[in-house]
Image 1 (cartoon, rainbow, N blue to C red):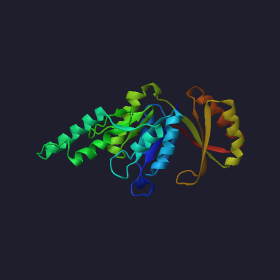
Image 2 (image 1 turned 120 degrees about the vertical axis):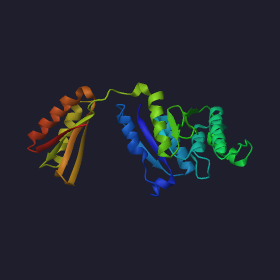
Image 3 (image 1 turned 90 degrees about the vertical axis):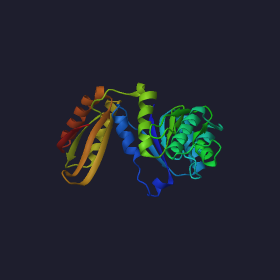
Length: 264
């Protein structure tokens, strides 16, 4: 199962808000021996959201979506998810109860009594309108839940809400995907050569070790290493050492110099 992240909101694409979800999700995955396979940034365009969510639902991937599940006119995620699935939106009973608890608490804080028929109450309850058959994701911050269908999970755009919900999903729904923590990649700082000179070696190592990916990250102005290439391997832990040894030997045979070696 691959793991994806969809971040939704015009405010991200316009630069009004800085995305805080990508880095955090990668961190949460890494703490569980997992890694992110893909990510998307999408605007608040319902038709485009429908098209992309259809792909997410059909992929079989574990996908986390942040943003757009409120009840204002610029929130389209709930409706797009329902359309992508070909299902109706309906008020989830448990979501209704949680939202009503929140409404009651807020009214009590003001010394008032919550009115179930008040227009503002009805608008708030719309946040519990999910695609038929959806399950809820608890929200420890303010009770108002997210939802999931299959392995696609939806949370608010607010990091203070979304990040604990991400953790809950990873631990409560997908603990079977957790892996023992250990070295995920080995790399070296290579100098006095170019990527084109290393490409045949990279291809050879990947062919010899099918569970390994070889990566190359060039830099021209690093404050410590100057012009260099970070060359390394990642993937199957059982093959990591042998693949790295083969890569290192190959680099030395090209006449390039190796500086710092890195373990992550």
